[in-house]
Length: 181
Ligand SMILES: Cc1cc2nc3c(=O)[nH]c(=O)nc-3n(C[C@H](O)[C@H](O)[C@H](O)COP(=O)(O)O)c2cc1C
Image (cartoon, rainbow, N blue to C red; front, top):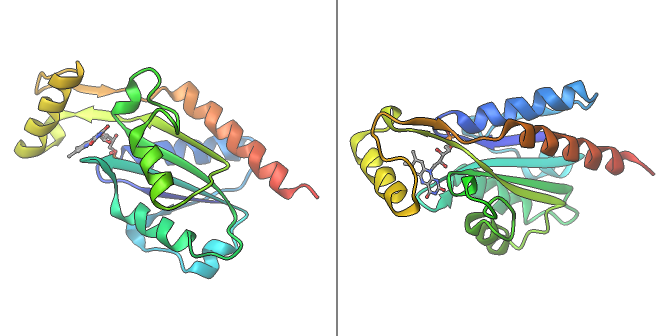
């Protein structure tokens, strides 16, 4: 199984590593691949037993590397099963952490005509001190509109790690059913 991730500020990498570690505890071998290091060839993607894509959202879209990977995936004649995980701040709200309830994820699935075996949105991290002036002001404004923190010193990790563990468990289960005759 391959876990491809696209991150800008590193939080998605932490989630991907956490899932990788959990899978390893469950006896499942998963290769972690940072998409910033390059896209896999179509043949490599097709040879995977299960493709997991974990991508952060910025300004309404998943990071371009993740979209590029899905564009390759969609051309595969016999694609391996797909797990899609979207990392964003909207997912901190009840009901916005599912494939149906999260607009970014819903649109991504529709745009590439995907049929993931499992898809979910996971709440990411807010870290104003890390952002440049423009991004900080933009995110503060979005937070003002959506009832989140606007204090420019705020650093909040919304990720529910027990849920990430549950998701890793689901991935392990998918992997094992994949291998069964
Ligand atoms: C410049 C910027 C734009 C963002 N845009 C969105 C957005 O449109 N919707 C959203 O829900 N979260 C948005 N986020 C929140 C990120 O998805 C969240 O911080 C995530 O944890 C970032 O992952 P990364 O550290 O792997 O890059 C944005 C964050 C930044 C810094």
